[in-house]
Figure 1: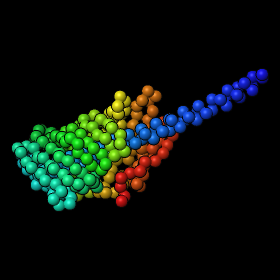
Figure 2: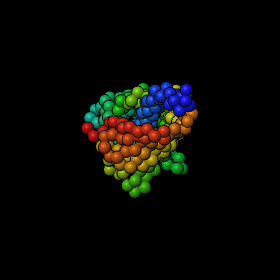
Figure 3: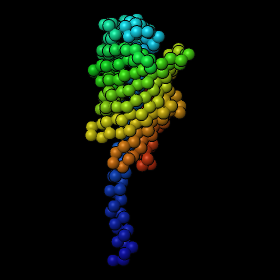
Figure 4: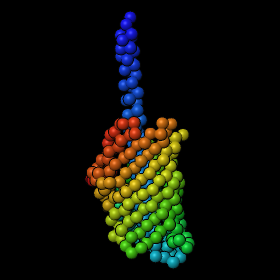
Length: 265
């Protein structure tokens, strides 16, 4: 049999396998994009809860003052009226939240959240904790510490996180790293930049967020990105926001798709 015919036959036989592998890679990349989005969204919820607890407390000169101020401002940050109670014990405030809407459009918040305050040379410290807290379709185990700083109308939180979650798309993840959250004096917009590891099962990925911004209940502003890198092949998934209720993702393997976002409605 001529060599050209043999090569052609081999190519035809291998084609279905190639198509299957391509389909599997595409499905894997779409799942990784969902995982990256879940990792970011749980960070959003965590940041919003820290902002709600530290905004009024930022000017306090003692940890006890900070806890009292945070509790007193609960009604301003969580709606509708009566959905949140806040109890103070020393330097700790405990929030009990029942189907609350929080800052920046974070909706459907349920559960008990504790924030403990301390004052150090670099500013007000707030430690966030909570088990089984639900928000925006995610269930979170909260474990984070933030340092609050204010300059004029700008507020900043430097956050170290070590929490876990089942994200709104059902991905079970653990997060370990740091980010910076910034917001304006009116509290209508906030931004988030940082990097952390995202563990899903036995896999660990590097997640980097740059230029992410959201105002009230609007969709994320155009220009923010998430890069999610890992795996044996070192694949990178990049999510890009354009201001709409969907984000585009692309893979370093050449694949792409879209993600629906919880916003705009």
